[in-house]
Length: 254
Ligand SMILES: [Zn+2]
Ligand SMILES: [Zn+2]
Image 1: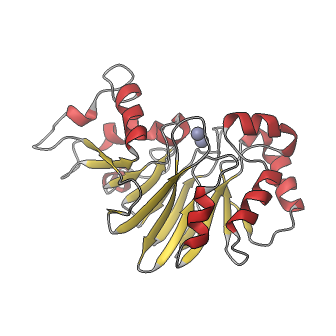
Image 2: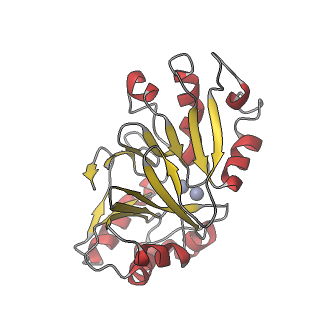
C-alpha cells in the first residue's frame, strides 16, 4: 500500500487540513480534505471512500468531491462504512436539504455515489484491500480499522477516547507495519478530551500500552491546530521514539 496524507488535523486553519488519507491513488480513508489538495484529475480517479464516522471533519469533502467528478466518472463513487455511519450521511448530508442526494442522481446509467455497508465481525474487500473494523469510544458511531494488502497491515484509530477492542484487534493483527492514532487535545484539557471522545498525549501513552506493539511506528494525527504547540511539547515529553506527528503531505509505503 502507498499511503499519502492529505490532511492530518482535527480542525481547519490556513495551512491546516482536516483528516484524510489517500491509499493507492484510488481509495480515500476519510474525506476531511480532498478537493483543496488533489487536482480534478486526481479526484476523478477515486473509486472508493472508507469512512471512520460521519463527523464533519471526516466527511465534508464528500460533498464537493461528488459535485466535482460526477460528469467524469465511469462508475459510482463507492462510499463504505458501518451501516450506522452511512445512515448518518443519508439522513444529514445527502438528504436534498444540506446537499443533493447523489445516491439517487444518475448522469449515465449509474448513481453518482453508492453507500455500501461493511460487514460486521468479519472481513470486507474494498478495492483490493481487506478491511476489519471495531467500534471506538466516540460520541457518534465510529470505526477504527485494520487495512491489509499483500500481507501488510495498517491500523487507523478513527476518532477515539479510552477504548479496548480496537487495541485488541491491533495486538492480534498479523503483518502490522504502522498505526495512525489520533491525539486531539493537550493534557490540561483531558476533561474535554474525554467528553468529546478524544485523546491527549498522556491518554495516548496508556492506549499504546494496551496495543503493546513496542516496535510499531505510530503516526499521530487529528491534533486541534489551536493547541498544536502544547500538544507537540507534550508528545515530545513522552520520549517515545516510535511517534511521528503528521502535518500533511507525508507518503508511507507498507
Ligand atoms: Zn469525530
Ligand atoms: Zn474528527
